[in-house]
Length: 602
Ligand code: SF4
Image (cartoon, rainbow, N blue to C red):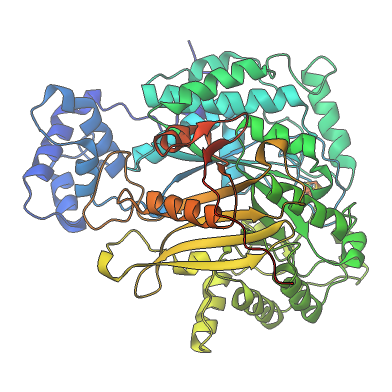
């Protein structure tokens, strides 16, 4: 039978026909006293693939995995991978990020800067690398997750701790059955992959609910996106936006989640992206039930005038309210903020950014800075052609970014400073891909280096335990106080941190969190090691996380709280149980002995 979706298997490599060559390579690698790139190259050339080509590292690792059971190599796969010097660059922050996209679907927003590529979920372009992977998998959550984990594993990354990042349009606008199904299928893929089970053909056999639509050139100006996508979906799904196969029940999801608690490939974080005006107490509860721990929230600007000029459809007060609700429910907030919007100026942007951290109503945990880029399908084209909007010049943009990075506090992680659009998609505006490096280098030369989390996190190397210290950074928020507890080295490198929320008694909070302090995040840096493995001198698994949690208990107890809750991911529940936390409805809890409260000064 012909493979109906050959693209999905284009990376598959079967080591079986190459036993002689691959075992020859592997045995020489194991026997080599030292192995560098040149030595590996020499070994590979002695055992060519099909008589002419060279085996890649991922193929050699696949060979090790395939043949090791029958050979007496006495070497763990992880140690073999380490020997091959496969440096896990993308997993240095301790977890393996797996990004998946929802299918093209109408969006309630009509933001003028937003691309309208009807082959993609709203705001994404088919040329973006992550979007291409999603399209290759027909936006199927199982295929996307399974194939991405397989790709990581193929190049030697540990995949036992997976952070799931769900992107695409406005998550909260998708019908609930689709949301449950989407997340369940991601969990199915993690569970199956860990067990060595491959059910990708089942997903392939299911009727494709979207996939690429022949005949569309990708452009649909303005609200045309919603119309075209609605029609395409209805056409494929008997007049409906969802195919009957794209639905699951809460019971089915919870079964998949429970299986993941003890799985080999566990989910240690789950984020979705949505708009501030869709953040409500009910929506927050739904995201939590899905297993969500983080929300990417499009703020874009803190100016009502700029929001209105860009037809965001919500105001700053709504953004403030969304952040308060999310924070009070223990979520991490990954904000998106855009300079150079229609109606903005470089000076106004610098002031806008300052408000993001000066005002306790905002102060996000993570931040994507997306300077507005003009793409052809965005409605902003009209304003550009009328001369009402122009992209900042290179120096203006660099100046704004420098000001932003210099002002970002130590508790925030700036994850991006530009959008991943290809230069061919950008009509006008910045095309410099490494703008962040340029801005950071300039700040260093000026003696005011960037101090955000990303600039300080340790990059998987060793550290001297003698020189480390635990430092508290406390700041006010709209719901109370926040303590950013951080392990730092003598050289101010960040080994790990914990976000502890100490809410005011009168702050709104879900019933389950009343009178509780809340751990919103625990993160230990270092190359992502397999659970249970130790590497001398590396950061993870040396008890830093436990010590952070014990310190959080002391702080919360001293502040008079009778309980400490944690917004745990599904795959970290077992870890917290070991530390004395017990299951609640949506959070885990540990009882505290509250210290008597000091009365406030008269
Ligand atoms: S809400 Fe987001 S995805 Fe929707 S139009 Fe606005 S920017 Fe685009």
